[in-house]
Length: 144
Image (tube, rainbow, N blue to C red; front, side, top):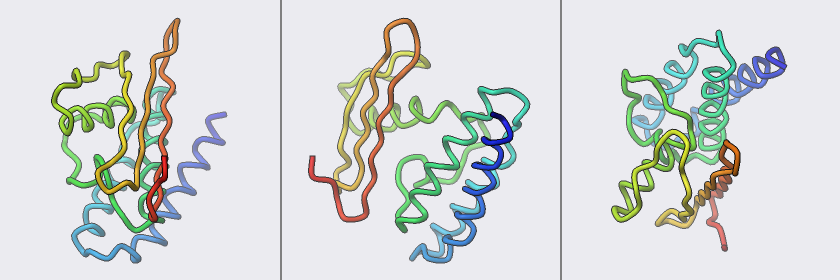
């Protein structure tokens, strides 16, 4: 299982590196490289951190392929440890919609469509533990 995850991670980084040149802005290209380095530098010594590492890599891969950086990738990575992607996206949405409660490590329940209509996120807590997170991104916009 871990070797399959490691292969998926390597493939994501290769895909990012081959498509990064297609980003229009040189600032986006630099930020993308910074994020790829941050993600690659995360330890893979336990399943939870490896999962976080893979989630961010796959999400960045989708955005680079579509030539548009969203969410956490709109800003340079911070020196702080990365939270799980669902929690990070939930907190970003909460800053855009102030009346939503701040997301914690276990309790995100939300749904949001981006202002430009190209991204949709929905997260729901699963009884007994866990979170179901649905993300959709389209360069042409989503019709939901």
